[in-house]
Amino acid sequence: MKELKGQDFLGIANFSANDIRDLLQLAGDLKSGKTTITCNKILGLLFYKASTRTRVSFTVAMYQLGGQVIDLNPNVTQVGRGEPICDTARVLDRYLDVLAVRTFKQEDLETFAKFATIPIINALSDLEHPCQILADLMTIQECFGTLSGLTVTYLGDGNNVANSLLLGCALLGINVRFATPPGYELDDKIIEYGRAIAGDRSEIILTEDPVAAVKGVQVVYTDVWASMGQENMADERMPIFQPYQVNGALLNEADPDAIVLHCLPAHRDEEITDAVIEGKQSRVWDQAENRMHAQKALLATLLGLV
Ligand code: CP
Image 1 (cartoon, rainbow, N blue to C red):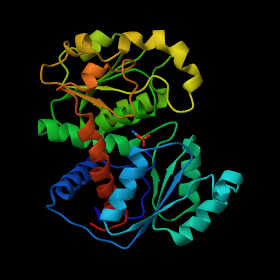
Image 2: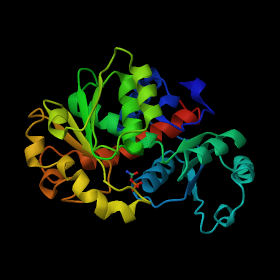
Image 3: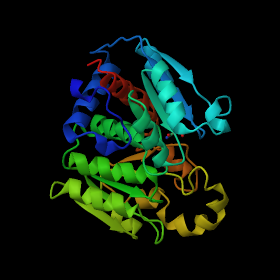
Image 4: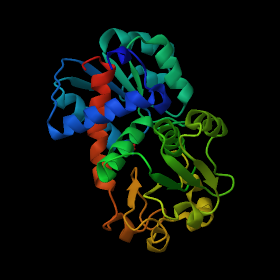
């Protein structure tokens, strides 16, 4: 995987299927202690939006690798006062070894990548959340021992998580279904790109019918109905998304051994019931933990440590 050194991770499809398989293997080996990696590198975290999991998992991952982290909160750095990204990127490039950015616009990430030579990581944008999907794929593989022959269903808003999930599943040949209300479908270009990547290796189904979407599947996945920055739309979305709630009745339509994933934070009794997230099929805490292992493998890969 050495050829990935210096490459950016702006979207899940920046990696090939083999890159992702290697990364998941490394993440598992790091988690089990089979592999240890040490470095003396510096990670910058520039987050324009709130975060618990991504911020803490990246920080702990880098500390465990022996590196250090600088929190570049826009409230206390000049980017928050309007310093252009092209200038910020070239300056940070001189100090840091890798930079993770959480931003409102994918375009901003691309600007960072254009003006910095260090790897730029998408820590969530309006278009994608690729680090989340690495942890999701790792969790699915841990639960089933394979990624082959599985079907994943995502219910709810066709948001950044859904976009990356579609591309990640398409890359790895996992069948995937998305049940979204009319008007809340995934990004058209992502669907087209996902279909091109998948070819005839996996089936991509887009539907408005949540019951049909979960019939017999092995993984049931959901996310909040109103993402960060959309809080003022939460009330109007509630009745539209209600049929897509992951509850006991809907989960009964899935494979009896199906697992339930949620990228968190969750709104209990909105997109997922309290009983389901706390139930025996829920794997959300393993999924959250795997953010750290997957991102440790990502950092090690992008920094050329493996
Ligand atoms: N899933 C996720 O990205 O969580 P945070 O927003 O807390 O980082």
